[in-house]
Length: 208
Image (cartoon, rainbow, N blue to C red; front, side):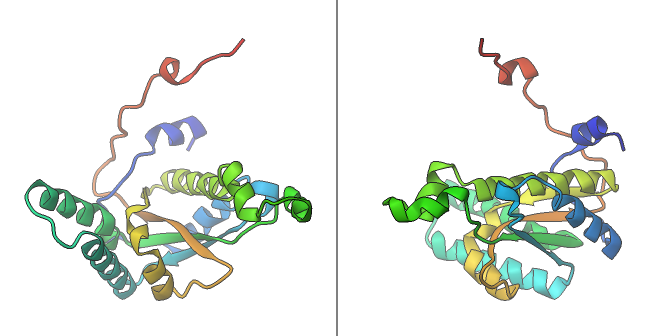
């Protein structure tokens, strides 16, 4: 598929068929994700593909329990909001595959001078607006576009991260890696319709 067409057609998909995704296609999505730019070419990422329904169900249960823990007593409109949050945070369970994206810490060039400063690596990371997380974002975009290119739909997920510690335990993700985000992938039930985006004149400004 031509690049502009792939970018234009990409949309967040949450309704999938039961058709499985081949191992070859999952690996190709991750291969292209790994070609993304990263801070100091650290390539801090690692990708875990989950297709086992029992694992996905356990993940959904952990997320549900965490939401109940965070919002134990709600009623009225808040109860409706919580119900919506529950749906969007666990909808991944209906996908034939979910790709967990984890990352390790990186060493910045400026880290080598920390002994001459009161700053820590974490301080620098905040000042630079988390270049490690930005790197992961670039890899996820590659993954999303590859999914479209290969004839799949995908959805970038963050709500489920409220249960990050529990999910890391279920997926047996250990140091130096930490969960950063998830992507649900599968064949779409119907052709996705991309949401309306802002016109370029609304988001572009030339500084002269």
